[in-house]
Length: 125
Length: 125
DNA sequence: CAGTATCCAGCTGGATACTG
DNA sequence: CAGTATCCAGCTGGATACTG
Image (cartoon, rainbow over all chains, first blue to last red; front, side, top):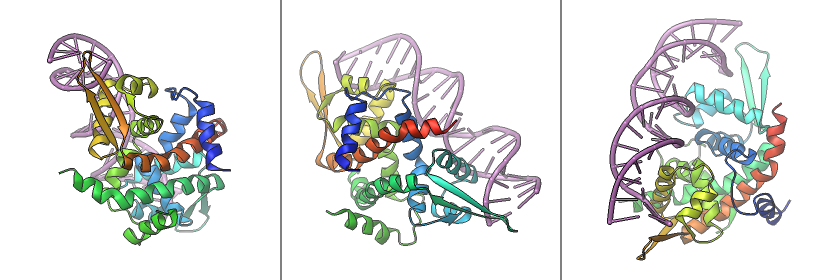
């Protein structure tokens, strides 16, 4: 699918440029652009990872928010959960195909921000 | 600047994939991926717009949040404010060059979400 | 029109303790 | 290890009234 098609899709769906308050787009957009959602998706774009590793990578995330974020992303079909029946428990998380599509669009954004963030923040006396 | 360079920048800056809790990247990322920040940036990518029009487009936004979001985006150097000395007042907002760079990365993401949101939400019984 | 100022309800999310 | 359960402080952000 080409980018131009995707952008046309935006205009087709919202011809007047208004985003209705309760449209599905806003709901899903809030999930994927949430503070922790972005970081988890970017982390998982490097490959399957365990709960503990995700917790370490998204520095500052609480257990509650990690559980909640993973559940939302799983529910939206971006993330797969693979529990292994061993003791102690081991659970791997990975991106679904849909999750990979999304991450491919998220990565350039996050990279751009990572490259420009210092300059942006330092301008703010 | 190529996308591959940008993604390499991510790895260079965060080689172990950890996003430190208080790094500038996280701060700026929170601004641009905030609930209203995304919508305002996308709306402005269609051209300069007045306060009232932005308020109408980002359906559901309060005056307080519109003012706050615009100030943050202006402070980050993504948005320019052009007040005209007329009565009644007229103020136009537009993207800076930096804002256009960012919007170019945001649009494919928002478009993808707009195209898939219905399917995603409908899967959630 | 394009905001600012104030108030405050309620949700977010952190901290802590606990578990199969 | 990978979570769940509970509590609650404090921030977010909506509503309302007002202004140059």
